[in-house]
Length: 122
Image 1 (spheres, rainbow, N blue to C red):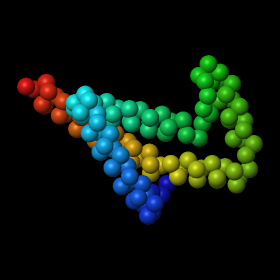
Image 2 (image 1 turned 120 degrees about the vertical axis):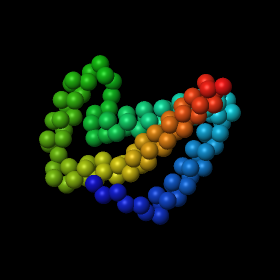
Image 3 (image 1 turned 90 degrees about the vertical axis):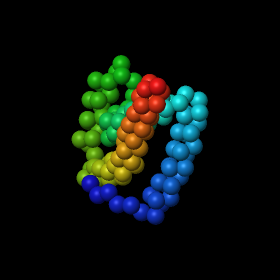
Image 4 (image 1 turned 135 degrees about the horizontal axis):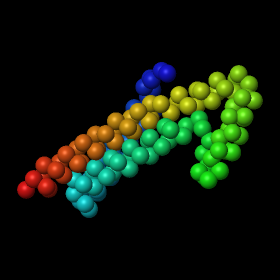
């Protein structure tokens, strides 16, 4: 797995920081530091869900066994080029998911930490 920054990644990172700052500000104004922590939890849950489900079947959990069996059969029927394309697609999501998990962890630590210090401490 190769993690490389390109120019478009830097532009997306700047846009992420601006939108994250605005969203965090709104969450702070509405709920306080607890809102920032909850925002971090939401981002973290979404990032982990995407990471766990990447490359696998996505659907309802009631028919999960048959869906998984169909997925495994489809993967076995793939040619080498299709398998390489699938691996490349999965690896292309590695950097954005890493950034999302780091941002999530930061928001959780800052939000809940400052909530404990300032709002529960006084």
